[in-house]
Picture 1 (cartoon, rainbow, N blue to C red):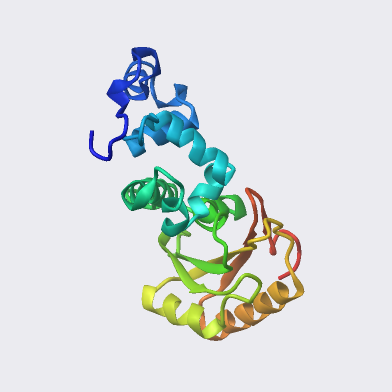
Picture 2 (cartoon, one colour; picture 1 turned 90 degrees about the horizontal axis):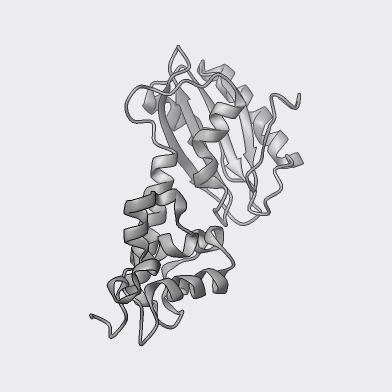
Length: 229
């Protein structure tokens, strides 16, 4: 059994999440059951489902687990480095899928479209990060990229870093987005000042800034819509 733990097949049929997923679909499973499929093996007389429940309880939910670092996850008895890596990989795949622009190019028609591209990546970060959405002449997404990583409260970017990347991408315009680790997306004075510098730099470079969006805990504020740029 690997780590002397209980595997999912050791559970009664009614408690086997893999079988339930196959029969009823992933939507029918609880968070703990989905985590148990990722973890696969429990520990020392504890099933994978019970270990997943303890993981959720210890960290306070999926969002906190997504934010946790591998040493934090692996320190929980029964988890260890291997299971922590599996959990982090699963969350990373979900994040990449949520922000993927593969296939037909996504079109940004407004702030809600832009926020949707970065929300799942930025909302859980514990440092301020600034992402840029680079657009072509039809407002189709060329690329979404994290340009800078700041501090818990610090301003995350300088215009030269943003427009160096904009020129490298050959974009026609761009939208910048950054997160507030506090979860409150209300723009600060520093955010407004940064926006003004970015607008000015965009005018000089011939790559206009269309919007600056602040991401919070499942919410966002568009500085353009708020009349602050």
